[in-house]
Figure 1: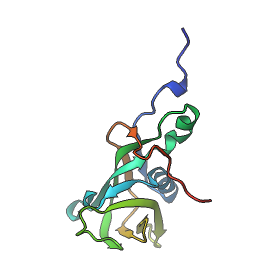
Figure 2 (figure 1 turned 120 degrees about the vertical axis):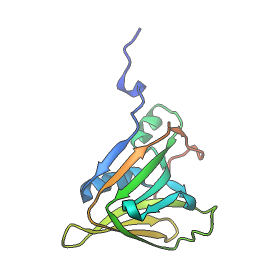
Figure 3 (figure 1 turned 120 degrees about the horizontal axis):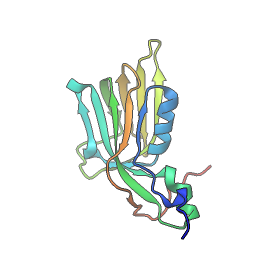
Figure 4 (figure 1 turned 180 degrees about the vertical axis):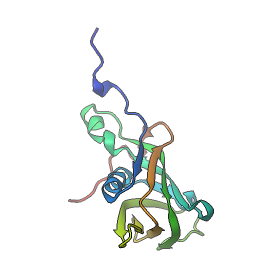
Length: 158
């Protein structure tokens, strides 16, 4: 009998918070290429909260999947932005209920007072712009990982 190695275990579901632009870049990297239906965006003005239910590629598992020759995985995650004052978008037709969007990046543009705008850049020239008092973001996995339908990792030309 051999001892189990670290690679034999499954990583725990992600539950990350971001309170500054460096933290936000970690979340942006982990949420890159996540897909979501237009119907899974929710703006809650009284709570000053904007959220997305994403199908996120498990970038943190990509190397292990490649090494162990097993399928790449996705997982459903919630990406929540708190302290949101307003939400604006461009290039998104919310009346197209079947539209599926792909998240490319999450970036922060600071104002002088620590407030600013969080930009969610989508494939196809779509952008969601959140005016925020501060960076207060959570990325949390909410389901077990499942095999990526394409069977492949998203590809980005260098």
